[in-house]
Length: 468
Ligand code: URP
Ligand code: ZN
Ligand code: ZN
Image (tube, rainbow, N blue to C red; front, side):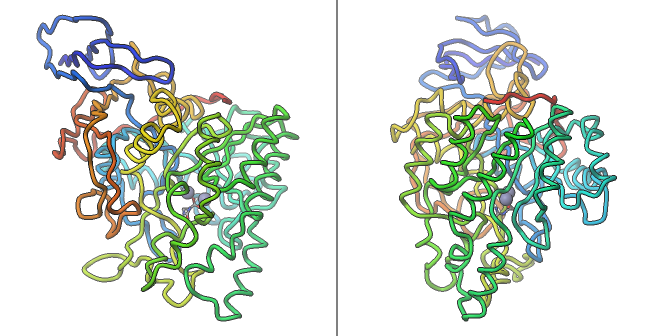
């Protein structure tokens, strides 16, 4: 089965070129001018751009968290991702407490294998690094898993101490693996949370008060220093604020192998949004929390100048009004106590369009840099390049036909994420997909879903990813 995409402008991290793209058996086999249609199914992309499918390396589908489950599973989350021009994601396996890493991996394969509709990989979030679990880390390479996540926050639930983090870094570096950290000082957060609750300060806004920017900066600086000492590649997830980015920049200036991402929402939602009436602020409760408007320009600049290498979503959706109409519990769990609000926001469907509209149309960076931070860098850092993240001969034909003039208004009424709200409700963006191909299969055409549960492939990733 051959597919030919004609007359489009290919945008990759490095180049912008006009060329036709021939796809055979899921791979790109030829790029060139005026390629013959022969027996191919032909798509005309005149006036449109061809982008590599988006890669979101920070998602939580079907995650047991905060006394409930994140509300998208591996089918609804994948369908939503595809409608948002994302064709690959990497989800976090959570090691069961007291269990092995392999048990966690098996659980995540069970959740995903029959539902997956886009390609996906796994990171391993370690919650309990006993000696035998440390010894198990290298075996993850046989599972195609090359990145570990450790939490410096969520005290008594997921938080690890510095010894554990440092040991994990040494082991990871020895085996060409990447350590990712959720960088917040969990001890400080636990103290502040108790104090605020004791004072009767239970509303969503106090979640942000309990998670100060300096608690993120302190943990970021600590992780960066430990990575520098260990000589271990580090990737700091969901960075939110100037204070933390400064710590990353300091490490990079010293030549430490440290990288970071931010997430789309941190450029648009701020702490004042947590004060929205009728508990609506709970929609935006996540950790680290949304910050001050002054932090947004720092994040844009850091994405543009490569202090940050990627933008992800941390897609971790919960119903705003859960526990009714067959829905599992959601944000209402924290009506009387901000510490019980499940942490996380939906966003897997919105990232590409929001980043294009505000990043490219808004003049923060070029279309090539957009591709770099949404697809190419994630592929390089996480061992998927050049199979993913580029439009080149030999790559998987994960291609988005992107109309830079097509407008779309983001809304919970039309999105595909299984949530009853959209963080960007009412935002009109210019730049939207018309066709999304996954390994040469057309899975989205306009508003039509053409994909299939079970057709997404698990991606076995290579170790020794790039440090950018
Ligand atoms: O609030 C968040 N970020 N929820 C998902 C879990 C995490 O910390 O990444
Ligand atoms: Zn986190
Ligand atoms: Zn996360």
